[in-house]
Length: 212
Image (tube, rainbow, N blue to C red):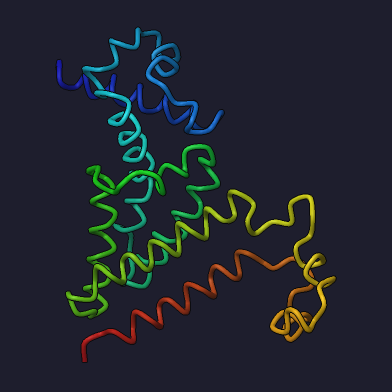
């Protein structure tokens, strides 16, 4: 019973930390802020979550736990890879303030390891040689995390200026590549369709490494 109570208390603390990060950004996370949210002193948090680094790792674990069902659903390796990729993108939208922690913290927490293992398992099921699995996992993870983060921080958005309009004002002789693709830079892309197209390309890349 004592262990169950401790686990429940830890979960309550991590949920509070995640809520603070979502509200104010993960930079606002501190032992004091989380303690105030759950009605404890900062010192009283230590038995449940350790120090601040351990707290941040716990939030990462809490986030990645949401991805695990995508790796355990029906379907083949393609379905599992796509499910994890789409889940990671959805995670950024659900937890915009906390999501950057996935890029800032190493993937060493229990659920982080399980997510990476799910990717390894899917790649092995595809027939990728084991020696190539870690590299392809990093490639897939970097694409998905980077794409979601780019949407989140506004890199893909227009912001106060439309980057396509700004580029159109540059002398074509200075940026000949832009001039050549100018008709395709007009308008706002369908980011979801582009994400799915990129996943299709990555699936073909994985298939190119399959054994036999």
